[in-house]
Image (cartoon, rainbow, N blue to C red; front, side):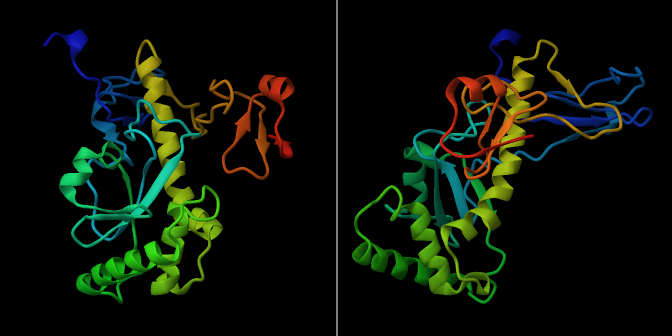
Length: 259
Protein backbone atom coordinates (compact mmCIF):
# COMPACT_ATOMS: atom_id res chain seq x y z
CA UNK A 1 0.00 0.00 0.00
CA UNK A 2 1.52 3.36 -1.02
CA UNK A 3 1.40 6.42 1.20
CA UNK A 4 -1.37 8.04 -0.84
CA UNK A 5 -3.72 5.13 -0.25
CA UNK A 6 -3.06 4.67 3.47
CA UNK A 7 -6.08 5.41 5.66
CA UNK A 8 -5.85 8.67 7.61
CA UNK A 9 -5.43 8.19 11.34
CA UNK A 10 -8.41 9.31 13.40
CA UNK A 11 -6.23 10.00 16.44
CA UNK A 12 -5.64 13.66 17.27
CA UNK A 13 -2.48 14.58 19.16
CA UNK A 14 -2.30 17.68 21.34
CA UNK A 15 1.18 19.11 21.88
CA UNK A 16 1.86 21.86 24.42
CA UNK A 17 5.17 23.64 23.96
CA UNK A 18 6.93 23.86 27.36
CA UNK A 19 8.63 27.10 26.31
CA UNK A 20 5.90 29.30 24.79
CA UNK A 21 2.88 27.27 26.00
CA UNK A 22 1.42 27.15 22.49
CA UNK A 23 -0.97 24.22 21.90
CA UNK A 24 -0.84 22.41 18.58
CA UNK A 25 -3.25 19.76 17.29
CA UNK A 26 -2.17 17.31 14.59
CA UNK A 27 -2.86 13.82 13.24
CA UNK A 28 0.65 12.74 14.19
CA UNK A 29 3.43 13.68 16.58
CA UNK A 30 5.16 16.95 15.64
CA UNK A 31 8.89 17.35 16.26
CA UNK A 32 9.03 21.07 16.98
CA UNK A 33 6.79 23.97 18.00
CA UNK A 34 5.75 26.03 14.98
CA UNK A 35 5.87 29.18 17.11
CA UNK A 36 9.29 29.03 18.83
CA UNK A 37 10.80 25.96 17.08
CA UNK A 38 11.65 24.24 20.37
CA UNK A 39 11.58 20.41 20.31
CA UNK A 40 8.20 19.21 21.60
CA UNK A 41 7.74 15.60 20.44
CA UNK A 42 7.85 14.19 23.98
CA UNK A 43 4.98 16.41 25.09
CA UNK A 44 2.40 15.09 22.58
CA UNK A 45 -0.61 13.29 24.04
CA UNK A 46 -3.52 11.67 22.13
CA UNK A 47 -6.94 13.20 22.73
CA UNK A 48 -9.63 10.74 23.74
CA UNK A 49 -11.84 9.93 20.75
CA UNK A 50 -15.44 10.03 22.07
CA UNK A 51 -16.55 7.53 19.38
CA UNK A 52 -16.15 3.87 20.35
CA UNK A 53 -16.07 0.87 18.02
CA UNK A 54 -17.82 -1.28 20.60
CA UNK A 55 -20.80 -0.97 22.94
CA UNK A 56 -19.97 -0.85 26.63
CA UNK A 57 -22.27 -2.53 29.17
CA UNK A 58 -24.92 -0.62 31.13
CA UNK A 59 -24.63 2.61 29.15
CA UNK A 60 -26.76 5.15 27.36
CA UNK A 61 -25.82 4.72 23.70
CA UNK A 62 -25.70 7.62 21.20
CA UNK A 63 -25.34 7.03 17.46
CA UNK A 64 -26.44 8.44 14.10
CA UNK A 65 -29.93 7.53 12.95
CA UNK A 66 -29.12 6.60 9.37
CA UNK A 67 -25.41 5.96 8.98
CA UNK A 68 -22.15 5.20 10.74
CA UNK A 69 -21.03 7.72 13.38
CA UNK A 70 -17.59 8.76 12.18
CA UNK A 71 -15.31 11.77 12.92
CA UNK A 72 -14.79 12.36 9.19
CA UNK A 73 -18.47 12.75 8.30
CA UNK A 74 -20.30 13.76 11.49
CA UNK A 75 -22.07 17.15 11.47
CA UNK A 76 -23.65 18.99 14.37
CA UNK A 77 -27.07 18.90 12.69
CA UNK A 78 -27.09 15.11 12.14
CA UNK A 79 -30.16 13.30 13.45
CA UNK A 80 -29.15 11.14 16.42
CA UNK A 81 -30.59 7.93 17.82
CA UNK A 82 -30.22 6.65 21.38
CA UNK A 83 -30.68 3.38 23.24
CA UNK A 84 -29.55 1.50 26.34
CA UNK A 85 -27.15 -1.41 26.70
CA UNK A 86 -27.54 -4.27 29.17
CA UNK A 87 -24.71 -5.89 31.13
CA UNK A 88 -23.76 -7.98 28.07
CA UNK A 89 -23.61 -5.05 25.65
CA UNK A 90 -26.90 -5.83 23.92
CA UNK A 91 -28.70 -2.67 22.75
CA UNK A 92 -32.29 -1.93 23.74
CA UNK A 93 -34.14 0.93 22.05
CA UNK A 94 -37.57 2.04 20.89
CA UNK A 95 -37.60 -0.48 18.02
CA UNK A 96 -36.51 -3.54 20.02
CA UNK A 97 -33.25 -5.18 21.08
CA UNK A 98 -30.14 -6.00 19.05
CA UNK A 99 -27.76 -8.83 19.86
CA UNK A 100 -24.07 -8.29 19.12
CA UNK A 101 -24.22 -10.15 15.81
CA UNK A 102 -27.22 -8.00 14.76
CA UNK A 103 -25.35 -4.84 15.74
CA UNK A 104 -22.59 -5.64 13.25
CA UNK A 105 -25.16 -6.04 10.46
CA UNK A 106 -26.93 -2.79 11.42
CA UNK A 107 -24.38 -0.11 10.58
CA UNK A 108 -25.73 2.53 12.97
CA UNK A 109 -24.51 0.49 15.95
CA UNK A 110 -20.98 -0.10 14.63
CA UNK A 111 -19.67 3.15 16.09
CA UNK A 112 -21.27 4.82 19.09
CA UNK A 113 -20.78 7.20 21.99
CA UNK A 114 -21.12 5.37 25.31
CA UNK A 115 -22.46 7.33 28.29
CA UNK A 116 -21.82 5.38 31.48
CA UNK A 117 -24.82 5.19 33.81
CA UNK A 118 -23.04 5.77 37.09
CA UNK A 119 -26.11 5.86 39.30
CA UNK A 120 -27.42 2.31 38.83
CA UNK A 121 -25.20 0.75 41.49
CA UNK A 122 -28.33 -0.28 43.37
CA UNK A 123 -29.11 -2.77 40.58
CA UNK A 124 -26.88 -5.76 39.92
CA UNK A 125 -26.41 -7.05 36.35
CA UNK A 126 -29.21 -9.60 36.53
CA UNK A 127 -31.70 -7.11 37.97
CA UNK A 128 -30.82 -4.45 35.42
CA UNK A 129 -31.08 -6.86 32.47
CA UNK A 130 -34.42 -8.22 33.71
CA UNK A 131 -35.86 -4.73 34.08
CA UNK A 132 -34.70 -3.79 30.55
CA UNK A 133 -36.40 -6.90 29.14
CA UNK A 134 -39.64 -6.38 31.02
CA UNK A 135 -39.79 -2.66 30.35
CA UNK A 136 -39.22 -3.12 26.61
CA UNK A 137 -42.16 -5.54 26.44
CA UNK A 138 -44.38 -3.19 28.44
CA UNK A 139 -43.45 -0.13 26.39
CA UNK A 140 -44.12 -1.93 23.10
CA UNK A 141 -47.60 -2.80 24.38
CA UNK A 142 -48.44 0.58 25.91
CA UNK A 143 -46.58 2.85 23.44
CA UNK A 144 -46.58 0.89 20.16
CA UNK A 145 -46.75 3.71 17.62
CA UNK A 146 -43.79 5.89 16.72
CA UNK A 147 -44.31 9.64 16.75
CA UNK A 148 -41.47 11.96 15.73
CA UNK A 149 -42.07 14.32 18.66
CA UNK A 150 -44.11 12.50 21.30
CA UNK A 151 -43.04 8.83 21.16
CA UNK A 152 -39.51 8.15 19.99
CA UNK A 153 -36.19 6.75 21.17
CA UNK A 154 -35.79 9.60 23.68
CA UNK A 155 -39.25 8.90 25.10
CA UNK A 156 -38.28 5.24 25.52
CA UNK A 157 -35.17 6.08 27.56
CA UNK A 158 -37.00 8.68 29.69
CA UNK A 159 -39.73 6.17 30.60
CA UNK A 160 -37.15 3.52 31.55
CA UNK A 161 -35.19 5.98 33.72
CA UNK A 162 -38.36 6.97 35.55
CA UNK A 163 -39.35 3.33 36.00
CA UNK A 164 -36.06 2.45 37.73
CA UNK A 165 -35.89 5.84 39.49
CA UNK A 166 -32.51 6.48 37.92
CA UNK A 167 -30.38 8.97 39.88
CA UNK A 168 -33.44 9.67 42.07
CA UNK A 169 -34.61 12.12 39.41
CA UNK A 170 -37.90 12.69 37.59
CA UNK A 171 -36.78 12.59 33.98
CA UNK A 172 -38.09 14.31 30.86
CA UNK A 173 -36.44 14.88 27.49
CA UNK A 174 -35.02 18.24 28.52
CA UNK A 175 -33.36 16.77 31.61
CA UNK A 176 -32.05 13.84 29.55
CA UNK A 177 -30.49 16.19 27.01
CA UNK A 178 -29.03 18.62 29.56
CA UNK A 179 -27.54 16.08 31.96
CA UNK A 180 -26.46 13.17 29.76
CA UNK A 181 -26.48 14.06 26.06
CA UNK A 182 -25.16 17.63 25.79
CA UNK A 183 -21.90 17.08 27.76
CA UNK A 184 -20.96 14.14 25.51
CA UNK A 185 -22.11 15.88 22.32
CA UNK A 186 -20.03 18.95 23.15
CA UNK A 187 -16.93 16.71 23.25
CA UNK A 188 -18.02 14.94 20.06
CA UNK A 189 -18.59 18.22 18.21
CA UNK A 190 -15.16 19.57 19.17
CA UNK A 191 -13.33 16.37 18.30
CA UNK A 192 -15.01 15.95 14.90
CA UNK A 193 -14.49 19.61 14.03
CA UNK A 194 -10.77 19.32 14.82
CA UNK A 195 -10.42 16.08 12.89
CA UNK A 196 -12.20 17.33 9.76
CA UNK A 197 -10.24 20.59 9.80
CA UNK A 198 -6.95 18.72 10.21
CA UNK A 199 -7.76 16.50 7.24
CA UNK A 200 -8.47 19.59 5.12
CA UNK A 201 -5.40 21.53 6.26
CA UNK A 202 -2.42 21.29 3.91
CA UNK A 203 0.04 20.93 6.79
CA UNK A 204 -2.34 18.94 8.98
CA UNK A 205 -1.75 21.20 12.00
CA UNK A 206 -4.01 23.57 13.98
CA UNK A 207 -2.53 25.97 16.51
CA UNK A 208 -4.18 27.80 19.38
CA UNK A 209 -3.37 31.40 20.17
CA UNK A 210 -0.47 31.56 22.59
CA UNK A 211 -1.53 31.64 26.26
CA UNK A 212 -5.26 31.94 25.48
CA UNK A 213 -6.32 28.30 25.39
CA UNK A 214 -8.97 29.26 22.83
CA UNK A 215 -9.70 27.43 19.60
CA UNK A 216 -12.73 27.94 17.37
CA UNK A 217 -14.74 24.84 16.57
CA UNK A 218 -18.25 26.14 15.87
CA UNK A 219 -19.61 26.00 12.33
CA UNK A 220 -22.53 27.75 10.65
CA UNK A 221 -25.49 25.36 10.54
CA UNK A 222 -26.48 26.69 7.10
CA UNK A 223 -23.31 27.06 5.00
CA UNK A 224 -21.17 24.86 7.33
CA UNK A 225 -18.26 27.29 7.24
CA UNK A 226 -16.14 27.73 10.37
CA UNK A 227 -17.45 30.61 12.47
CA UNK A 228 -14.79 33.23 13.04
CA UNK A 229 -15.69 36.36 14.98
CA UNK A 230 -19.33 37.33 15.59
CA UNK A 231 -22.16 34.91 14.96
CA UNK A 232 -25.89 34.55 15.73
CA UNK A 233 -26.84 31.83 18.23
CA UNK A 234 -30.42 30.58 18.65
CA UNK A 235 -31.79 31.00 22.19
CA UNK A 236 -34.23 28.09 21.69
CA UNK A 237 -32.49 25.42 19.57
CA UNK A 238 -29.67 23.33 21.02
CA UNK A 239 -26.34 24.36 19.46
CA UNK A 240 -27.70 26.22 16.40
CA UNK A 241 -25.47 29.00 15.03
CA UNK A 242 -25.52 31.10 11.87
CA UNK A 243 -22.85 33.30 10.37
CA UNK A 244 -24.02 36.86 9.87
CA UNK A 245 -24.31 36.39 6.10
CA UNK A 246 -26.60 33.37 6.43
CA UNK A 247 -28.63 35.09 9.15
CA UNK A 248 -29.29 38.06 6.84
CA UNK A 249 -29.96 35.78 3.85
CA UNK A 250 -32.10 33.06 5.41
CA UNK A 251 -33.13 34.21 8.88
CA UNK A 252 -34.39 31.75 11.51
CA UNK A 253 -37.73 30.92 13.12
CA UNK A 254 -36.54 31.70 16.66
CA UNK A 255 -34.89 34.65 18.38
CA UNK A 256 -31.12 34.68 17.81
CA UNK A 257 -28.52 36.31 20.05
CA UNK A 258 -25.42 38.06 18.67
CA UNK A 259 -22.23 36.63 20.19
